Length: 92
Image (cartoon, rainbow, N blue to C red; front, top):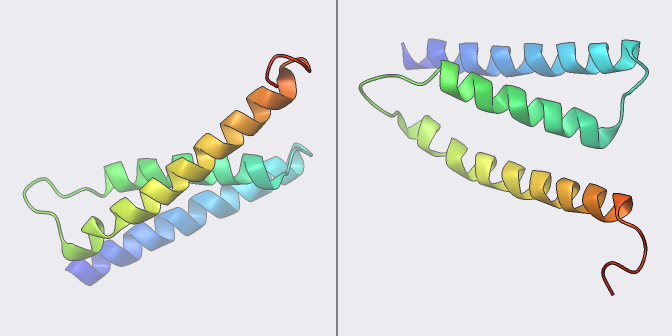
């Protein structure tokens, strides 16, 4: 049963990422940063939808590291975007 849930989780993520790439491509807005952010959002939603109520399988505990790295990269992207918007001279 656990293997079936893992496959559903992986298939859900792949479907989300393909749909995201296709939508961004159709909107002519495909950038690596935007694709990463939307893929991270889909990954987090998929994690929440696939979370078992009673137990936490070992493979699910390992996802915390992926989420932590993803949030760090997301924070870096946000800081870069904010610094690009602010006028020069605000930060030395």
